[in-house]
Amino acid sequence: MEQLKHECGVAMIRLLKPIEYYKEKYGSYSWGLGKLYLLMEKQHNRGQEAAGIGVVKLHADPGSEYIFRERALGAGAIQEIFDTVRPQLEKIDLDNLPARDVEREAPFIGEIYMGHLRYSTTGRSGLSYVHPFLRRNNWRSRNLLLCGNFNMTNVREIFDSVISQGQHPRIYGDTFLLLEQIGYALDKENHRLYKQLREDYSGIDLTHKIQDNIDMAGVLKSVSPLWDGGFVICGATGSGDMFALRDSNGIRPAFYYHDDEVIVVASERPVIQTAFNVARSEVKELKPGSALIVAKNGDLAISDIIGEKENARCSFERIYFSRGSDADIYRERKLLGRYLVPDILRSVDSDLDHTVFSFIPNTAEVAFLGMIEGLQEHLNSIKSKKIIESAQTGELDVQTVTRIMNHRLRVEKIAIKDIKLRTFIAEGAARDDLAAHVYDVTYGCVENHVDNLVVIDDSIVRGTTLKQSILRILDRLHPRKIVVVSSSPQVRYPDCYGIDMSSMGEFAAFRAAVALIKESGREYILKEVYEHCKAMEHLPDYNQENCVKAIYAPFSANEISDKIARMLTPNSTKAQVELIFQSLEGLHKAIPSCPGDWYFSGNYPTPGGIRIVNRAYISYYEGKSHR
Image 1 (cartoon, one colour):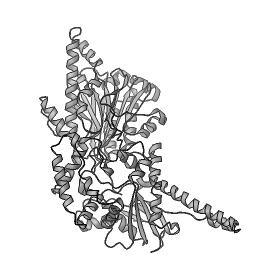
Image 2 (cartoon, one colour):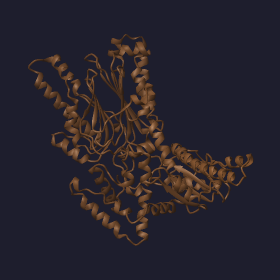
Image 3 (cartoon, one colour):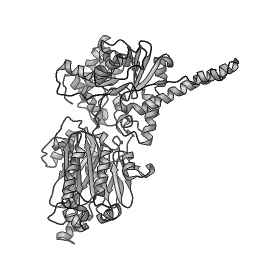
Image 4 (cartoon, rainbow, N blue to C red):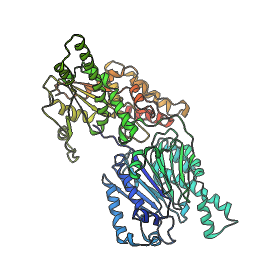
């Protein structure tokens, strides 16, 4: 129901054959550019705030451009970028040029392609914050294109490190700092090679020798151990080196594919499968802590850069963000729905005859299918028992079997996304009234004041849409009871690794726990937690602990769920409202390969994450609204 924003998606392509090869085999010099477009469009779900592309030519003549970049803002950014690039290629009659002239004259046709889709989790926007970033230099091997799916928790530490090298960053932001940090290390690597080779080579020969011998693994090893966060950092030099580095815990996803024509990196596996028509088994996951590195000559290596640590692959990726067309994700989302069945049956007293099942929004459809499969199994067991009982009493005939088998679940399309809330209506009452009509409902499916209505969502974070729109509109169907089911557990803690959940006061579960603390006369807990958080600020990493867990400790998950339901139910609602959340046990059972659950459990995989949650509580307690 609520749109969560993800940091971003990445795509990289390295062509391994001369560009005339792709013209001859696929009919176009722009084959690589077209594949980049596909990779980006297929990952459009990962970032609709902005997008950018970068292209590196390996064989451009001196005096001609060899790095091209285009960026745009807004949900239509991908289309805008390629609409800008297309006329530049049409103007030079690309299809009728010989390969050498394409190398000289054609913009955005090269050997390295980089694409990026952006959602901001920092609150900063504008074209200057859109990836890829570019660091320019008159030596090709010192130029750097950089993009990534990341959020660093220790920006201050990185900033201080950059300053200590004598640099003067223009902007305080993790991408800007990483660009300068990696760029500085790249400069040092160039200088190392210059000193090593200058006795035997000079001039352009020396330049080429340096380009051929850049140790990109060494460059990354010199800077990345400082980074704390979830990340996939992608880069390309002007001379033809390319890399993608993943964090040690595997928090952010990265996959790759390679054959004798191409090397591809993307944030999601099925995107590569679709764009390049390859089998799932051919698309590999980039190992946490490792980098995919492609040298100027096209040699591919997977290098351990910072080591693999405890698995903290993001479970929210599987629940919500990643494309459900991935075979594993599809299966996992169905299991998330299936594991909620016992709680749903309890809530409706197992009265399937008077219960209607549906889902909101479309992203919850796969979990809904799993839920229905689980309910169908329950119903089938009831049917089997009735048939056996009828046989034992001698009452089994065609009519009896037909009557039993016709007992079906009541599955309906109840809610339909109807309009988008227009932000030009700023007044609270008018805005709330419009928000209540974002969804429309299907009338005639629910028997007034008799039927239960069960709707499943993939997550309930803030509860704003639930309160302002969903419950109001569902109540118009006059159900006896509304049961809203979340396929994810209660979101209790902020994310700091790339999902737009940053302020404690945003979370319905946190607000409910605080309300229960106040109602029970234990407000001293709020102050104690604040004091503990303040004490943590000056302690080293190994002493960090999540003090905010104490807010939830006095209450069971059901108590908090019931309080959330009461808080989010509009006063005018006639139906009884109940909220059911996935359990942590059910989450890990459904998604065993991605145990990262800090937003639910508070168990952050890095010290920076723990510092962030404590700071978030300090900001809440002190009444500050910043991230």
